[in-house]
Length: 271
Image 1 (cartoon, rainbow, N blue to C red):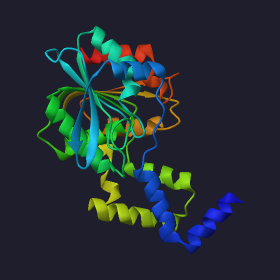
Image 2: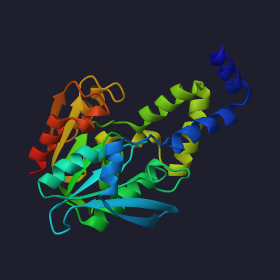
Image 3: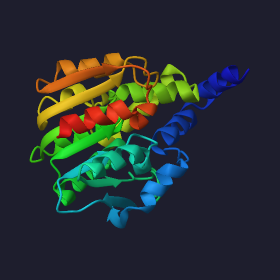
Image 4: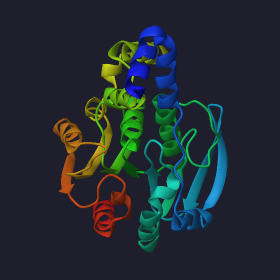
């Protein structure tokens, strides 16, 4: 019944339904943090920076004189998701930097987009002067997008804990979530392309990585990831000559951040 109602609304009010899908795409939901994640955030040195109309919450752990690592969370994620990895990095004398993206975590709220996330990642790399990165999920889109858009950025080592490929796949996911028709989805795409001034088909991680200046990269992806199929990560790998790939199982999409053997793989690669 609900499916039929949504289809009828798409037929009668296609622009309104496209707006609904746009709102879902540009207003990330806030997921509640676990107790230990909050405790790790409390131990950080916090600073709020102003960026494109947002108050961005940033975090630092450890000695700034030590080698730095920047952590980039995924869409609807936040810095606290890396709490277990932060502890491991500190044990190995790293200076850890992280942030909550626009309208994510403890940053201020409002409609946001992939391009704001990309620009913020570039800004954080420049501010912190890091040469080592770790991203999760959509954070890999924002990070590779930043390295593509700002070719002056050079990275020594970069770990991607699961990574999608095409931004169009995110749009397809939202369209299915809202239940809109193909016609309404095309209206949504048209609006996004006008805002971004480029076709959606250009926004692919597999294209971004071709020119990204990364000396060594590592993708770790669970073969049973239900959020991002491993085929997407493997397609990225095909276009990234200086990247290695580790296929794992038993962690899924989110637990990969809390899995000890994954954290050890990250540490081995960074070190």
